[in-house]
Length: 199
Image (cartoon, rainbow, N blue to C red):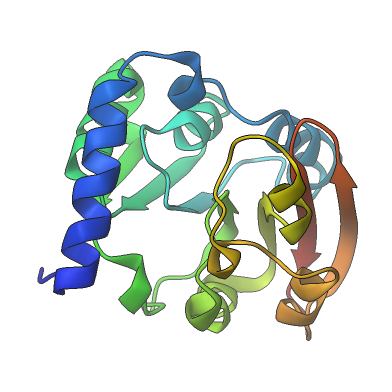
């Protein structure tokens, strides 16, 4: 695997973050949106489990939660420190998770497609179409990240390149059947989406 100098910088930045915050709930407790999506959408469609792709999965909080539900998960992240923490955090569930260190800015969907493709608090617009390609027909895209309204709140990223415009997530998911969409400003300004690929 090769990294460009910009992705080297990004990798080091995230390695540092994971080292600094090792073991904190930030990296181990899944976003409540995942449990909601699982009970309302994933479980009814895939009652016997399946395979999922967790993009920018970091220390594994979402991949591990899905593995506990009996799913096979592929976790990809640019940070080897984060991926190693995910492997440790998974414990005996590690056998149900495929851990990959890779630069997602060059992500290309492979021949393998997944019942669920998910990304939390990660935005790389150029790879969005590849994310959609990775969803198998009938499968789900689960996505949640920050919006530009975050600029008015304390904390979080301040680079507009990492923040969604109002309604942008719906545009990015064009061609999928939207099952759930919400933008809100609470502790964070977020947009969340569940969309299904046509069969």
